[in-house]
Length: 181
Image (cartoon, rainbow, N blue to C red):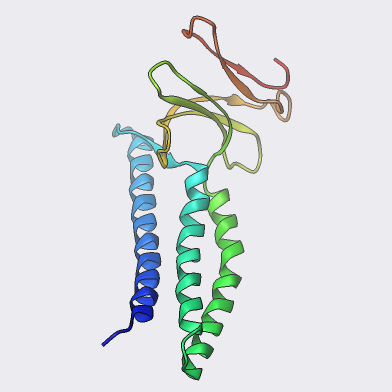
């Protein structure tokens, strides 16, 4: 029969694995939606919010680390060794996983809230050769940003920096500021 500590260890490790599986499934579905939009089949292109990309990596790692810490605290020497080795491997994977997650999607620069409660997010796309801006719509706390439109390129380095979104006083116009313009 499993002890209480054993249930906690199993629960943490299973929850971490389940979160990784859910993340992979969600990202595959989003990639499929992007392919459909790119091929003219319609649909709603969406990307994961940058806060979710970081949380989606850190939360499974934290749960796995907790499970391994509990396993290490057990009385058996071989379990402590296995937990220590797994923990070192886990630490080696955290930084690359966070870097990949951060680089796999747009980075939020600014956002405004519409009267409907919906948020518009100005984001910088992960394109290494130029600064490409997009506009996304989302609800508060949603892990998804849905594409609302593309803005033009940065003109080879011109018109970048100090990016902001502003709603007009009557809330009918959205203004985008870049490089003081």
